[in-house]
Length: 141
Image 1 (cartoon, one colour):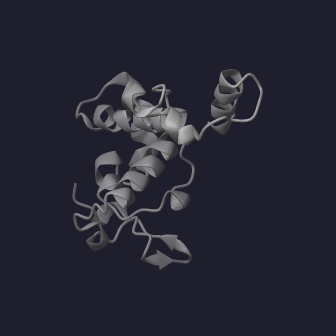
Image 2 (cartoon, one colour; image 1 turned 135 degrees about the horizontal axis):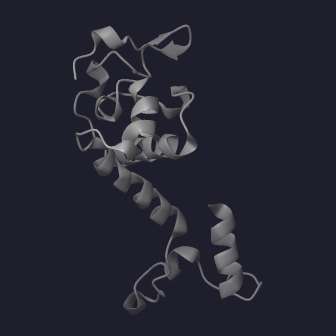
């Protein structure tokens, strides 16, 4: 992501030093900006949009891969209710790991708490051998 952002700004300023703060360029024109896209925010939004698609019930061929990987942790719907830390979710393709990381950032940013600390599975606060526990037989989805 930083490489794309760097290339965009180098193009904008013709390979010279930035003339104004980058945050200002993201603003509307009436506020002095040029409505430039914040690439990092756009990528995060596109990844987060996948949560709704992945949570729709039903067996679809394209969901086989994410269901397999996320099923190792109870499935996406269950995992999103947990107090997880993405660094403990191993073996997950980077696309799905990004989704979980960005969702966690969003929860933290908005102080979202619906009792995630109460779920014992995948809880970053409850570690056994340095890792969160997950026992499939103990979850109720």
